[in-house]
Length: 339
Ligand code: CUA
Image 1: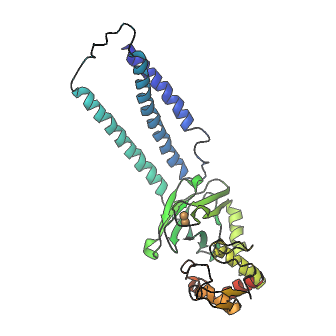
Image 2: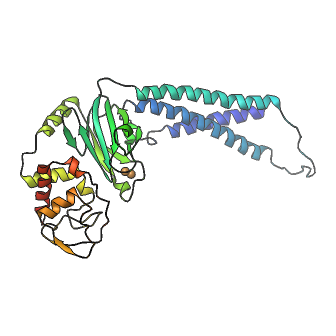
Image 3: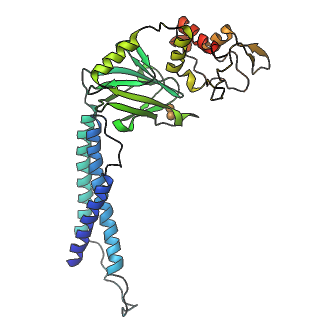
């Protein structure tokens, strides 16, 4: 009896200590969405169960090692008490885990319901992932951005699609995560999140998606409702600046700069620094001059003339649908401004 009491007390003390450490302030990232609350609540129950069962096993083993060790004067030939089967114990160790599993299934269903709850007034944002960048489109206003800008305390319905391979949308502070699939309308995945804390966070691609997967990051900026409306108005205007400046904005939005550097470095595609009007060696051994029509062609039909030392099929072949003639002219003007 005294053994049970001591093991019990140590188990409770150790459970308490571990639980305090596991739920401490620096274990999980900050909580910045309404969905994070039920998810963290589940983490708390998980941590409690883990702390208890870990403590129970470790305390029991350590206690037995110390208290029931071989002592001076023990008879080496003496055997421990032998018993075979114990129906009562077996029933207990089936029923307790069963109860725990059922309890967790119940808690999990509750918190999943909470996380998936739909708000009919949600703001819709299309999230387009591609190797290795993010683009965000706001269908209500026709805005396109390379940062995910969101209002505080309003549910957002993210409609996720990919231009190429499987990616995954993950903002640790929001807790929610969703794979993003290529393949058009029927493969669009939805994710709902209600940001609750103004600030800037990072979207991290959480699916290994190729060479620059580690660098597939984008900012999430949560603004007050008023600042968000202001941002939308600011974004809505057509680009009225010089062609090259509009081109630079487009190159950022459409993630051209994820693969083409502006400083002469080779990332995945040729650098844009000094590209315009230079002599370009091609894979087939010939050369060509990178004039406006070559640059335009390379955007619309990237596999037609491959720059020596680079691979075909790396650059998306979708820009003919995504960009209009004016936008392409603007991007070319931007490249020409870099010679
Ligand atoms: Cu996209 Cu990893």
